[in-house]
Length: 144
Image (cartoon, rainbow, N blue to C red; front, side, top):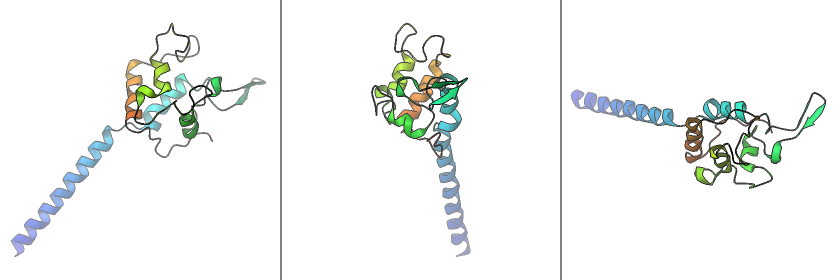
């Protein structure tokens, strides 16, 4: 009886450890918005797409009405293609990705020439993966 109980307990513990390891491995493969996507947006997009503010005595409004400094406004989109800026699960339908992937010569390419560094193909792929995974912001809310 002691051996059966010990073997059962060992099996349960082994399953628990295996489950924990698998879950952690799956979570580790998911894109973390705040750690991986937000720095890309800050570096290449915030200059033109953040909340209206004063800069050297001038009022700066977000270009195209598009803000990328808050979770809700990222999902809302801008004046053009509202609700299509980020379409959770569908990177190819998301204008955020479409404009980043356009050639430099395209008028809609983002960021435009002279306004910031173009997003690298590796970072575009990372953004696509984040959108494919459901475009979760985690606990990040950003600017309201």
